[in-house]
Amino acid sequence: MSGVIVVGSQWGDEGKGKIVDFFAEHADAVVRYQGGNNAGHTIYHGDTKFELSALPSGIITEGQLAILGNGVVVNPDALLAEIAEVESKGISIENLRISNRAHVIMPYHIALDKAAEGATNNRIGTTKKGIGPAYTDKISRNGIRVADLIEPEIFGELLKSYLPHKNDELTKLYGEAALDYDEIYQHYVEMGQKLKPYVTDTAYLLGNLMRDGKRVVFEGAQGVMLDVDHGTYPYVTSSNPTAGGVLNGAGVGPKQIQDVVGVIKAYTSRVGEGPFPSELFDEIGAHIREVGHEYGVVTKRPRRIGWLDTVALRHAVQVSGLTKLAVNSLDVLSGLKEVKIVTSYNYNGEEIHHFPASDTWFEGLDINCETLPGWDEDITGIDTFEALPVNAQNYLKRISELLEVPLLSFAVGPKPEQTHLLGDVWKA
Image (cartoon, rainbow, N blue to C red; front, side, top):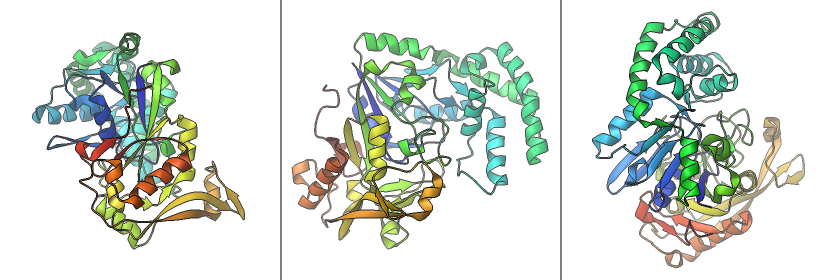
């Protein structure tokens, strides 16, 4: 076994990119297995800050393959723009690999996403990047894949077949302007040829790597609670950020996975619409938002803030099979007189310990919290668990106890040197 999956275990924005980059130092490849450029990873590499949404976060670590798996939807414009940006900061992309089976985000996907979000009273709160419509076409077997994009004749025939129907939807349903075939064709063919050198059968590549005992890190976008099957449906993303998404989204088998590292914040945040049982609407929530700089990497939207919710996290443990826990942003809670952990919910007078499937349940739901004493000390320079204030140590211990998952790391700031391992991620 040589694969480690890094899973966002809340509603995304847990700091997965930093953890992936931290573990990738000892890996041979980093694989993004789902999502698109609607999810951003902020990573500090030395003194340089990277905000990635299209590239795998492992691209900045020299010597590792950075792979976009077949489960990803690729926006060529966004990908090429990000390639230019990282290259301008001295990062080589010679190790980038793109699955020939990944689906392509087309201009009509973006146009339809924007139109749908603007037209309905029941908005999901998407980033309007065309991710959902691209996955819809994939499942409807009307998608265009990277393998098609890099073959101009094939791409042209597919675009000629699909575009009239998309234009009808845009003009007749939403009253938007039709898109031009020639303009799309020329631009996408040009981009396809630029990306062609990096396109390959990534499942075959990964199979060979893992048979040779190479170390591979799999990174997802978003978080478990935004999973289309296991999240707060319908306020979810259009793919499977759970660990199970790796099997389909990268083309590997379960026996090739050694560990599933669940990344969480020491509190909870969420962007967009949908249920959020532990949400704070008071000055504490506002304080955490400002101290934690809780604004979307891609959208810049202010994130909703809440206490750590172990009901939701136990759901993440179950559906992703978490074996280790990485806790980020512990420093953000410094200065609070007390910190709270949600331990169960009350629904219609009944205490429940599982996360409800139905959106309607949350209308009559209350939370039960365990209150722990906070700490005043500045912990951003601390580099061992034992050096943490006792109350901070107890907080981490209690999280691990409630989730029944051992703690692998804790972070007291956004930079790699502020993340501290308690064990070896590659140790069986």
